[in-house]
Length: 390
Ligand code: V47
Image (tube, rainbow, N blue to C red; front, side, top):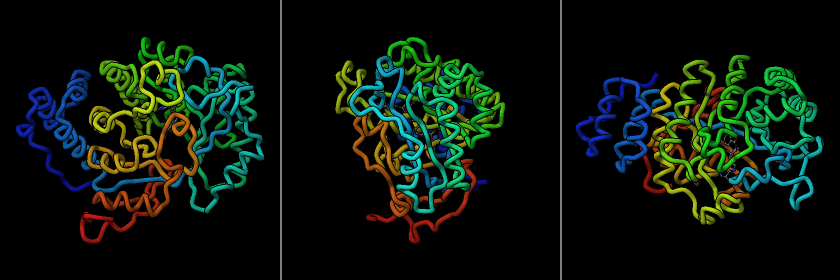
């Protein structure tokens, strides 16, 4: 439990609408959907950040966690290739650049970065008709045999629903079978924006928002924890964001199964949506990135962890977000495809030293965690406070 941290004085908030939200927050009242809208609309990012920082430090003190993880994408073949307008990763089976790893290729990918430090495999891929229950069960079993200590966080709700459809099994039975093969938790992808109108525009044929929620509800009921996300910065309105966050918060009230919330910044290169919006080469703004993280911290008051994905928003902005409500930094990653195909200019991986440098030079205390957010080791903070230069 963190030491007492004084709440920012609402009287110091210049924007009157945000001041009323700050008063509710200071009084310990739960923020409503209308309050979330006020937070998204307010130009006073610093006041919003101070509230989010307070909420974060009241839970986590100055500790910022990270995990030594490795992303593996076993296939980019996807039946939604033509209808998920925001995706640059998917390919049709015979299209240039399509791939479907054999098991040996999965083992080779896992071994490529085998430095003895990796504690989590993060495995997501396309909706490939040849990637069913047997394929993923063999992958999970094989990885657990080779790396028994490594946690497997794999398959978005959309992939789970796809396997359920092609195997003609219920979602529950698929999850039970995959868990027996080694699945530990589910990542938060595939959520995009739940609202029907946005979904019809950016991901017409994708699992409906309510079905995404149902897959996670079933996972939580089985004791399988998961993450949640929102893809922002494309055609969604602020009201769509609030509706989405409300659905996440409601499920968390019901199950308590979400570990972390991760807002995903839309990357517009090499995809239909980016072309249609005339946004190629134009990333989301730093202002909106920080605002999404801060609102996530304040509105999702029942989700303990807010994670920044440095691959998406740059290490510099991720570091800044540690003062805007964020307590968890995406880990080492090793090799990333989904965002780099869509224009991410960031590196493919981050070393332990660089992670420690980012966290320490933000005046925070780095701590390595496992996939269930248990602290494994804590590192010394910067000895003499925040340095001017690293
Ligand atoms: O579902 C795809 C998103 C997700 C783009 O749980 C895009 O720890 C931006 O699941 N621009 C997959 N986003 C990634 C994922 C994930 C990522 C980080 C952490 C966790 C976690 C999970 O990537 C997809 C989709 O929402 N995505 N294309 C794009 N052009």
